Image (cartoon, rainbow, N blue to C red):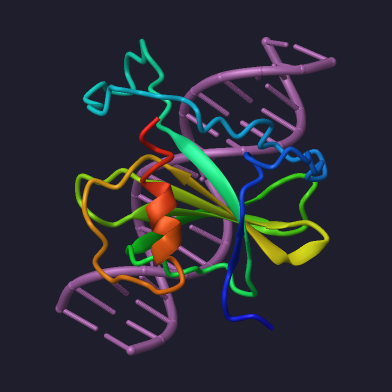
Length: 144
DNA sequence: CGGCTTTGACCTGCGC
DNA sequence: GCGCAGGTCAAAGCCG
């Protein structure tokens, strides 16, 4: 019963836990994309701009971690090899196409995997003590 | 009343 | 070419 969330970086970790053969394959956080503009319609996808995405594991009892941003859940799907469903969240801020995925580890309901995709273009509206330090690191990784 | 959650359908990429 | 898995949208309903 810890109110605090313990952040773990599987990417930096040399230990490769076989997340039950999760889909995540490789957390490519070293992808650097200078192209932030995305005016391309899905009609002609000449370039799949993969926004920087990085995942980290948090030890929490709840999936909804308040990181200070407002998220709107836009979907929930059950993934294979995981008895727990994965939730999809999107930043409600206009112009901010940041997406977030929350998934629980199979077998370890105490561990929640949060995957962020994209970078926020605006400051936090509601600073959280728990996630403040996490946000700090977040701003470092997407810079790649 | 507004914002958000929920749930099913739909789309796309990939493997066989 | 089909099926599977993952990802997204949209309509309806709920809650504050």
